[in-house]
Length: 420
Ligand code: EPZ
Image 1: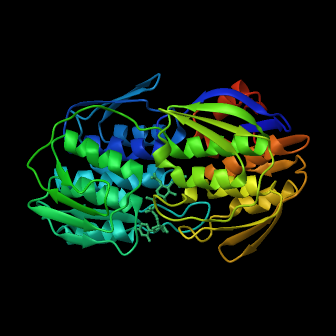
Image 2 (image 1 turned 180 degrees about the vertical axis):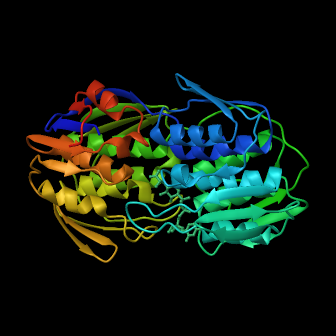
């Protein structure tokens, strides 16, 4: 298990290119199950989660190859319709294969995802939605066993806005008989990207970019290719890194409208921005005003930037309140940040962060993807040496983050290998 060793106190300068969006690609890859043939996804980052999804598809007979940032899939010889526990337990997004398998082949056996570092991650909305489309679903020995002669379009109203359930139902409805309406559909850019991709394949989805989606079922779709949208969460993570470290950095390959809530909050902190085409220049003197955040669904402040925001607020000149309303228990990073000298108290799903003058380097443990990112941010701004252990969590969602940070002047090294 690799670790990072970070020497804090260095400002960041230069340019960084943001990679393609993990959460867009994790939805696009299963869409390839909807039509046999060859697909090419460009701007595809080399991430742990992408390789997990590729391995899962390979167990189904899909050929995959990932060269540079081009991911090719060939679903011509698809011959298995199952997602076994050993894959699903590694990555919850594996459940995205349920909709396309059910819709195209009328059968799917998908392991229920376990919990994750911060608690239960239910999939009831996925299951209920498939049942409403006419699937017969049984839960046996930890597996979802689903079958349907042909799914039939219907109206589905989500009580909770769910990225995954919206994506899964979209991929089920495109080949259903008749029209499906989804009310309270997720607006996240990754779902918009999926819907546009499905239409390129020949689907008939309208209302894209709104919470009311209409899908007119078609009889078949065709394989095609697309470039992955930029990763808004990676962009937000780098913006927070510059804000907490101080310096001036240009982020390339970004779509600012995908994280405007984060930009607004960063401006309130006192950092300056210059937006030009697909780049953002951020300038910070490292002095941070305290700014409260409550996470919400897109276009609100994303829960995937909550941990990074808490790290930033540990160095603010006052007290900030950070509430996560999407995942009430997504705070495993708080105890680790306190080990670095942060002053944080929890009150239910609200972190009360009192800014401190200095964070002191220490050994800290990654617990999940975005928690690890917050520990790196704190290490960059801390005094002395910070060791972030178990960075495989980070490698799930960031493509060679230490190399990108090194190029910006951060003192961060990866130490490979043994159990730390
Ligand atoms: C996606 O997860 C992202 N993952 C997550 O990013 C992100 O945190 C999350 O959306 C919220 O934005 C991918 O896209 C692969 P949800 P997903 O269904 O789809 C509840 C990262 O760091 N819910 O939108 O699993 C759920 O408990 C990852 O890149 C149900 O109750 O999230 C949560 O409170 C972490 N029943 C809320 O909805 C369900 O059936 C939002 O979850 C499904 C969800």
